Length: 358
Image (cartoon, rainbow, N blue to C red; front, side, top):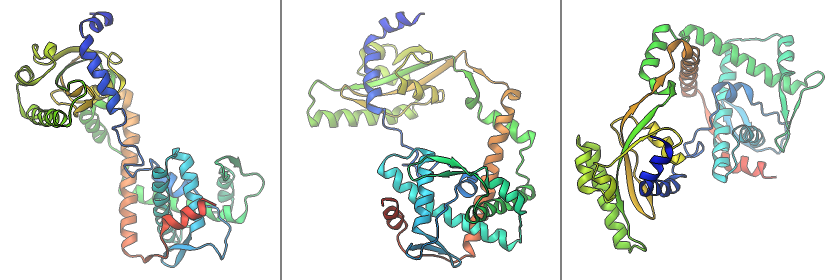
């Protein structure tokens, strides 16, 4: 059946889905709201270097076993991170400053542990690495290091290289490289991540409509009914009977809520993304608009093709390796923090934020 025929036959249903798609377009939490900057451990502890000239007037925010971390260092680190993750809102900026403080504390813990282990890096290697860094300006622009790197940059890069060498030793000792068996297991358990062609998805829905210009009482009654039906739908094995009984979309209700098959791109973008991400047999979240409430059940799929393991093996191996390394770093930091004295001298957000706002 062609797209034009589907559009004609499902006109009222598609209109309802379009309306509810607009209502939920902003429902997904942002990265900052989830408290995750998206930076990996290499970027956090090796890549961002707060190159701030010492200033006796610069307030100390926190000390790590006596080593100070200042407001200017946090602001400098945070400004770089903001540009890396494209943080634009006030809430995102606040989250970045909190993250910058935590990252600098953890970097200091790793530096102190590397020094305790007497890890050293030859000057020539440090100088070579230092020339690869880009120096960031106040407005986010960057410039390559030219000429001989200065002592401050050399010291910061040396610290990163010491941490890197120490963690490489830890990774070898903990055998973080994934085995073929682990890669195979991940592939089998996450086949949905390797879909080459999603094929078609069959969906059904149940809708509770609102009249034009509904009263508050009508809105409450419709919401209560939707929640009750939604909870029943998550438990029942006979979705079609429930749709015939409860759905107020009469056209689809007569068919047990069935809307037919859809390929990617035939539904509004938000709904399209939602239904193709929902496993067969499960329902989406409740969707709301000025027309009422609805939710969708993924009934079946057909024509789906999965990338063969050899095609995605390298990608899986890299993902597992990153996860294993991250777990080692987190475990090491947790252990180091337990045996350390970390003292806050002032509120990190206030000090760093004030400095950044100059």
